[in-house]
Image 1: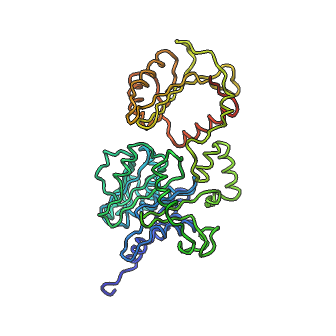
Image 2: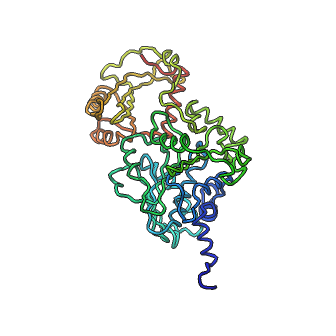
Image 3: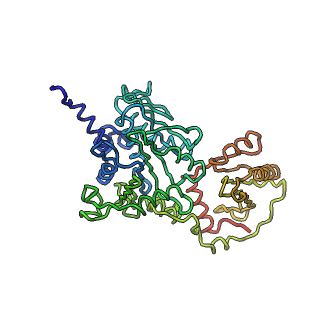
Length: 452
């Protein structure tokens, strides 16, 4: 071969470096088929536009927002982009997969990337390696060919200060609402010293007035940006509703902010094969039976919903008023406490519930106690008051469980459980929260819960 000419393998590598679709459909294995991913037409078009390189070989956007309804494959796409970056963006980089907590960080984009390696026919489970290409672990993996590390982390601002990643993948940014989340986001801003450094956000819509970080990005890209046409995207028909050059597609750019968004919403955003036809009808019918109307809009329509919107008609709640005999100290009736807390700008809430002895089939509940603590203006909440209340209730009543939001209350709950105050059980703000919301909705709708 003449000097200066690329061999076939080098040509393939260069094409894979410039084209994530070409690379993904050859190297990125998925769990459903145990074969390389086969991307849908709209996915290919959006990926190629968002990650195309200019004449200097640079990526045009530093922030890419990929937002679709649930079960649209956005986590698989994020994991694919992570692996592609690790293998083709140069040497000794760092890729961070960020979640609200360690479990979410490990089980979303990072897990998708790790699983794609483990499914490769040449993967060796005994050494956890794909020879000469990857060494994989539960929380971090290393691309042996480039030296680039991929890690799953939670929003520990202090622990990651000074990081200089080439790619940060954010999972479900709608849930990043605390002060520590905002600080961590600021610390993980794209690096101006690296030729490739971007943040990739895979999420569905959030709550107006609550998911402020995500809503700010939505405003930058969708509200203040420019919506692309099918002609600009480069593939007429990639979106069924956009067959012509001037047809609008659900992609937005804000060149000044170097931000791109694929924000797909409404029923027409259900584009994957399992979201359409009879299979789709069965799936969404089942979901409608377990989600509230508001959650159906947000999760399966990718629509913003108000955090202050009515969870139920107030008349339903008023109809549940039915004063019950108070529990006397020492009463052996099993009592469950639930805790939720913020530190600044939010309150600490406690609620206590028991079974309703007058309603057993189907079972009903009685709200026995409710307490609320509010932080002072501009200050932080003192947990001493809630702690005294929890200790007092556990001493006076038969508290069989204290359920709590792990984000702000992990140390609080762990300490009290270690002291033998009660048994504490954490719950997540995702699937468990959604099941709980639906369960409460049904209890109120069917008048199986009482309060005074």
